[in-house]
Length: 200
Image 1 (cartoon, one colour):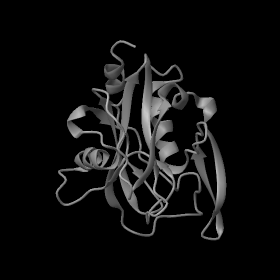
Image 2 (cartoon, helix red, strand yellow):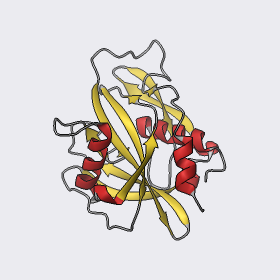
Image 3 (cartoon, helix red, strand yellow):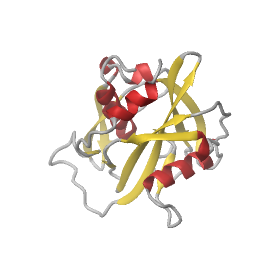
């Protein structure tokens, strides 16, 4: 477990290609509007000798992606310096993770969503234990998933559902009662590919 943060930092150095919600559906769904910048935080926390990734279940009352599993984060506001600042600010607001309790290790390639956001996934190390404080209007629940689970290729597959009158395929990586899919699962897979099947 020693120097795990440095190994992740090194894995994030290469640029890699951007990903999108459209890549599993070539020629079926295509972007038709300008994207808006957003940032999400992929918080990694060491607890009880294991590494965990923090995720949220979004409120069912939200306009975008209601009830879905997501990383804490959101759109870049005028007061944010960049997508990293937005990810840290939103994480503090959504789950009570103080921004000064996060060491930014690097970023994954951007991901474009069908809701026209261009997301910058920011990978961060949680420096000290903290208590979840979900923001009721945005987050129904915050929870942890073992990083080892997300780094196991066999946990990933693809699925499909009807959307806008056609079948849309997407990535999934379920964990217990949590159905992690779409953009969140795709970003998890990119991180897993960077770290390799042995994880940390």
